[in-house]
Each structure stands twice: as structure tokens, then as C-alpha cells.
Amino acid sequence: MKKSIFQPVALPALAFVLALFFGGLLIAFSDSVVLNAGSPLKTLKAALASAGNAYLALFQGSVYDPNLARGHGLLQGFYPLSETMVSAAPLILTGLSVALAFRAGLFNIGAQGQFIFGAIGASYVGFHYDLPPILHVLIAMLAGMVLAGLYGGLVGLLKARTGAHEVIVTIMLNYVASYFLLWLLSTTAFLQKGRKDPIAPAVNGNARLPHIAGAEMRVNAGILVAIVAAVFVWWLLSRSTWGFRFRAVGANTAAAKTAGISVPFVMTSAMVICGALAGLGGAVHVLGSDYSLTAGTAGSFGFDAITVALLGRAQPLGTAMASLLFGALRAGGLTMQANTSTPIDIVLVIQALVVLFIAAPTLVRAIFRFKGLKVTGGIVSKGWNG
Image (tube, rainbow, N blue to C red):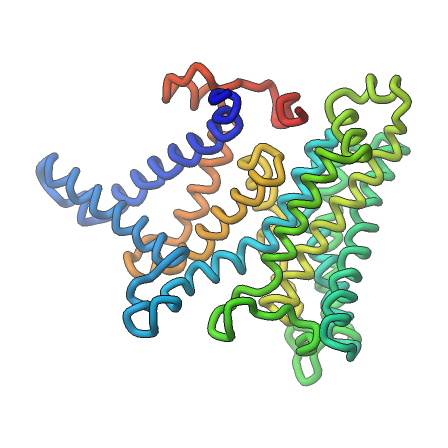
């Protein structure tokens, strides 16, 4: 029993440990103090101090900062954790979009484009209409989900009807979404009055997600929306007939078809839901923290979503936890750079190393001599669908 509980988290945990280790080496040996330490013992001490200080600053910038607590009270020390949750909320939603597609045997590389369309829908409803507070937020999020769901469903429809590979289609649609956003922000309908740079008007106050930890903390109801979405995806995959069809098609398309499951319908409906989840991530980002739609609103959320889905083993809980981890890296990277002069690019290196080790389980097993680690033949394994 213990083995079955440990195995699902073994690869992600060990991959992250290895990423931190090699990231620490990179931090240490790019430090001039370490390189000029002299003796091997002094070099080792300097290397440990350099990596340790960098990771301490990363923690203080993402979880708890005692310096803030001293000046403003104990709770204010958790302001970095608030920032982590702000970054994690849209990432959880986009990560669930990718994870759900994985479980249905699809590769949703288009979460970035779907995120953009969700942000567009939420932004337009947010600044163009004036509705009661709760209703305005709900309609704005719904608009983002519908717009992105249709955009994602297009991929599933093309896959089901023409056999077009979803990876190629979603990559191309990411470019379409990015350039469509640039054009949209140059139109009178979206361009903020008095501005020439591409930025939309800020959403109305009634359309903004409320803060849940006081006005001084930026964490908002978006994190609650993300948690509810994770529970919904878990229920969908584990407790519903629809989810069973998704998993059946993902495990073996031919067998699912023989059993009477409509594969085209499953593919299309799965991509509609995936698009809606990513679009909800874009809506939460605009309504919860950014407020104004810009050309860079999506950032790298759609691409980071692929990483957190891999790290979370395409499981809702695992994806949510991985998103919180990456939210911490995103939030703490700035503090790490400010306090220790460590380049913020090291965060990207750690993320890349996590993906590398996730994709090479044999290497991880060899390094840790861990015989219980299951080696799979591809990114989406049968073990993920169980």
C-alpha cells in the first residue's frame, strides 16, 4: 500500500530535487566569490553559502518574509505567499487544461492561445458593461470560458473530422491568438482612450475579483476558483461517465471505438472543456490582478502549463500542487535577484531541468538507485489514466 501511494509522487519529487541541486551548482559557480575562493574547502563553503542564500531569498520572496513581519506585523510576513497564489491561480487553470487533454490522449499545446481568448472575453465584458458586482464577475468569466472553449473546440473538431494533428494546429493557433490580440488592441473598441500603446481600458470595479485576505494582500478569489476547478476536473475524470470516456479514448482509441464510444465527440468535447479551463485562467488573470488587457497579458502561462501538467502527472491534485510550486518560483525569483544578485533566469533553468528529468525517468532512477520508480514509454502513459 505504501508503495502505491509513494510511486505517483516519486518522479516529480525527485525531478524537482535534482533540478534544485543542479540549479544550485549553476548559482554557485557563476558567483565570482566562489570562483576566487582559493582552496577547495573555501570554495565548497562559498558555494554552499551562495546557493543557500539564493534559495533562502527565493523562500522569502514566495512564502514568508520575516523582515516584513517585523515592520508590519506577523500576517504581513505572508505577503510573498499571497503573491505566489496570485501567480498560481491562472497557472492551475491552464495546467488543468493541459492535464485533462493528456488524459484524453490529446496534446493541448494551445493553452496559450486559449488563455488569450479567455482574457479577451473577460476584459471586454469587464470594461464595456456596468453590471452588479457578483453578476458582473460571473458573466465576465463566463464570456472568457465560452470564447476560449470555442477556440479549443475548433482543434478537437479538426482532429476528429480531418485527422489534423492537434500539436501542429494548436501551435499555429497560438500565433493566431497572439497576433489577433495585437490587432484587437489597435481598434477603437479595445484601445484605451488617450493611449497609443496597445492597452485596453481597465475592467470596472464590479468586475474585479475580490481580495480574500484584506486590501494589503493581492491574493483574490481567483485561487478559490482554481481550487473549485481542480475538484471539478477530479470529479469529471474519476466519478463521471463522461470522464470515463475521456480516459478510455486516451488509453486506447481503437478499443474505445469498439466499445461504442464516439471518439470524434469525445475529442471535440474534451478540447472544448480544455479551452474553457484555459480561458478561465485568462479571465482570472485579467479580473484578479492585471485588470487591463495588454499584448503581454498571457506571459508564459500557457507554456508553463505544459510543465506543471507533466510535473503533476496529469492529475488534478498534482497539477494544482505543481502550479503552486511554479507560482512560488515566479514570485520568489524577483526577491532572489534583488537580495543576492542571482539572475532571475535561474528560475527558468530550474523549470527546464524539471521538464528534462520528468522526461527522463530512467536517468532519475539511475541517479537515486530507486527500483520502485515506474519507467514509462511516453509523456502520456497508461499509468496516468488509471
